[in-house]
Length: 251
Ligand SMILES: Cc1cc2nc3c(=O)[nH]c(=O)nc-3n(C[C@H](O)[C@H](O)[C@H](O)COP(=O)(O)O)c2cc1C
Image (tube, rainbow, N blue to C red; front, top):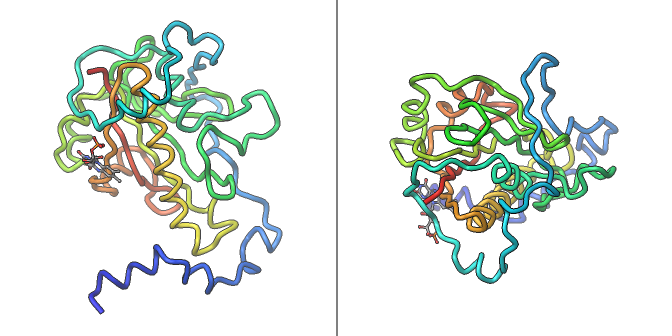
């Protein structure tokens, strides 16, 4: 068989059938990993505006029109996003369905077994009221945490990490999704990895649609150097690593 065909196993159900799920961490009684990475007490946090304060920034548009207008957009102008718009995009991609309730495992995107393995990192270049830099989204409290402020070479480093796709660094904000695979493996063992990637598609699709709703555009990016991107995010590439990203900007 051609070598690449061997890797189709990953997409097939054969793998799941070979797994003894009684060996899973969940089945053995190990507590689940945290829903969100811990944040140092002294980190700078930014509270994002709640849904009730989004008007008039977030128009209520027709879902048929929104789906019909979706396309990958790579030419961004220099306009900024408002903090309400960024709050909306984060809500759409990883926000809790019921932010004041007791079901943090349910979000505005679906996830296999509601395991939600992603952390969302943001390279913020042009969002009103938010200093430029790298941030991580905290879905449980709908906040951002600052990881580091923008430095002079950051855009060059981002361009290099996305294999020279220059439009990415011209974005107002770039979303980067990293997986913490243990959250999914805790239940699904070797069957975790396929559904992690299926989950990622839902997240990015919601970003596409939410962008269309605010006159912004995005483009899914799977062509990147994972090691370089992980280094920029400050993650170790093993227990957490980049799986997908998407620059966002007005056009
Ligand atoms: C999984 C995935 C990976 C992609 N990676 C890239 C990429 O690295 N660079 C890029 O310019 N576009 C990328 N795209 C965008 C596709 O090129 C685009 O969706 C396709 O050409 C269809 O155009 P449309 O999105 O406007 O319908 C990717 C899309 C998907 C779904």
